[in-house]
Image 1 (tube, rainbow, N blue to C red):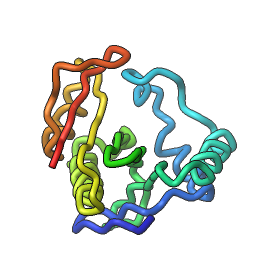
Image 2 (image 1 turned 60 degrees about the vertical axis):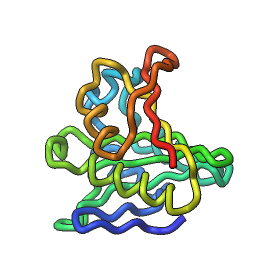
Image 3 (image 1 turned 135 degrees about the vertical axis):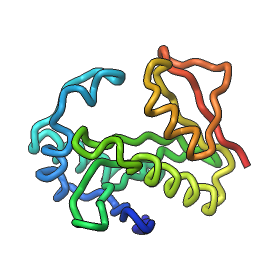
Image 4 (image 1 turned 45 degrees about the vertical axis):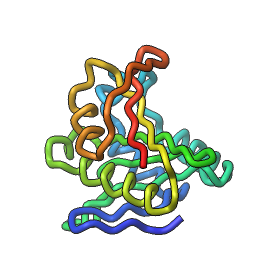
Length: 157
């Protein structure tokens, strides 16, 4: 996995060492409103990151770093299987509303398409308007399909 650069952000391949700073970024329980669960502690996040890094090659995860101050603001991920990738993004509460999720999701989707992925999918809770706006900006469109109470969004080449 390579670093992905944009004028606003750098998407850095996830490493277990990111857990300490990411635990702070992801500490707001409100980030789990649509996905469930609760914020993880730094040791719990490190264990999770160790599993992700050791996982199959189709598990791709990046930390979103804001170029202006080189600080983490969230993450993007893609689970690639064949020519399909399922993507997700999370931006910490203090960094929301600045276009960071949109910039990160667009960069991720473009990289996946450049790498030969034919279909990019995201599952979004129907009440999560901000995430739907990010998906739309990244070129995904809602479908009639649902999974676990979420709408399937897609972009195909």
